[in-house]
Length: 463
Image (cartoon, rainbow, N blue to C red; front, side, top):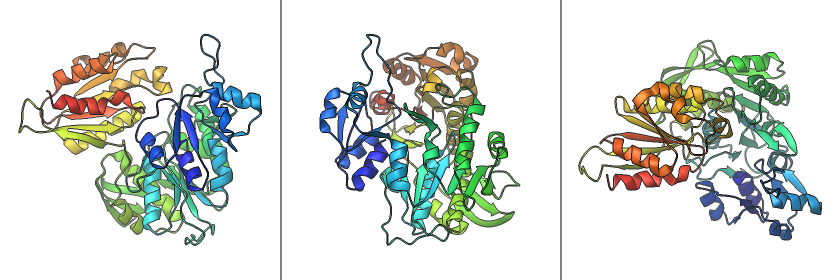
């Protein structure tokens, strides 16, 4: 929604927004754009009388224990008959119409792959518009409208290009379709597909059905880029596909990689066409790169040029972002402790993130500090997978506050390697007792995590 607000502001609208507990980097970006942030959902905001209320999917008709509405502003909008729409619908009608939309869907890697693809198209001179669920460091903003009418158009649709992160979560309380069905892409990337969002989907089959709804919207002249390693995506396409397909990932895919994730050859139809040498690690990022190259090729960007762009890709804020590197204060001159921030929260994402860091640091100690904050993780739907996801970490520290399940029991297979704290302060105490020179402290959460990164940095100054 912050990205939607940024696009509306760039288009010339006066924009305000309300939410609770907005945290960086989005809060910083909105303030820099001159977008006023109002804390809470009070009814007094109806007096702003905007031309349109754009409603995010956090808003509902829920009631608090005392019977009062959790979102009183929404009740006031409905009572007043004021105009409202969803974020995805507003985008479809006011930003995406008439453009060649490249949509990146998948359980994991959407933000990173969308950022890669936008940067590749920028490098190729297409001046894409984009909307990303994070802040790509190559651009410094999460969204922009893209080139003007004078921008060079690409060879297929004759339209400007727009790259969008395509989420399968539902659109709004009044529109339970997945958000991505609004985007009508001509190029759709299906990066991977696992069970997630246990709060709205009963099982993987239900999510596969939504992904097929996305496939149904791609025109015959469009392209579906699909991860050939994923059986779930094969099942999606077996339900019907009416567009050109390009696969990536396996040795028999259209696009596949040979080499280590930080330095690999890209093969297209069995022939080496280019090479990627970059700062990113992890097999997941290698796959993300292949997806971006295959999607960019659909709008006329040769794989060799895409690879050149990726060699200058700087990733996204909160994706293995180094937040601090310093020696322990009590041991000046010792090997520094490095603190990382990452958005990983699904067990598979945690595993691939830890694996990527392990490949980077070799035998260095990894302390994984994580918060099961997503609705799926809070429900405990995947708690049994956590020991598997943390296999390559030397120690794990879980923030258990607000969980409806026993984190100690779930992490018991890890034995003494696992620590659980119900407050941030307890977690910090546990980490402080374990820290050694040269450690790599990997913080993972899809929220602000109580500012734990700054607190850990302060900890280094006293430990």
